[in-house]
Amino acid sequence: MNLSNLKPAEGSTHNQNKRLGRGEGSGKGGTAARGHKGAKSRSGYSKKIGFEGGQMPLQRRVPKFGFTNINRKEYEGVNLDTLQLLVDNGIVTDAVDMTVYVANRLATKNEIVKILGRGELKAKLKVTAHKFTATAKAAIEAAGGEAVTI
Image 1 (cartoon, rainbow, N blue to C red):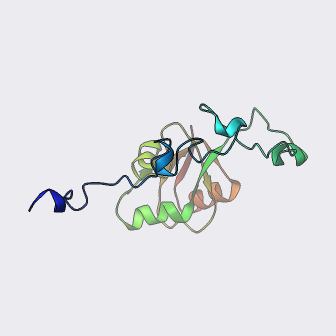
Image 2: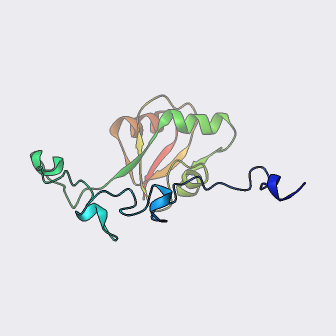
């Protein structure tokens, strides 16, 4: 080993960028590959998100429609077949409430839960939730259970 064949350890160097603005002899001096004049040639330049070179941007060309209801309640739906699956897996035996939903990641602690009627429920359960669809409530009570609204 001597000075002519020294090189860094494999994988220790990553920087393969062009070295800009390091004199005329490097081939990347002068304007440092930024061209002449204009905003892009200057330091501190950053274009606005969605800027299309002065052309009318997409978000302004496309018409707006509809509205957002500020009083809308967003429910997290839990179906009957999901509750039956919890019973089959031995996770629940008699009662289902918010702690069960949160523990099994069916909802978070701040979400509003609505029980939906997909699938069938064979087990007798006391189901506690914020809302029930008519079919879900009927199916829970038909299986001998109880639907409790929080």
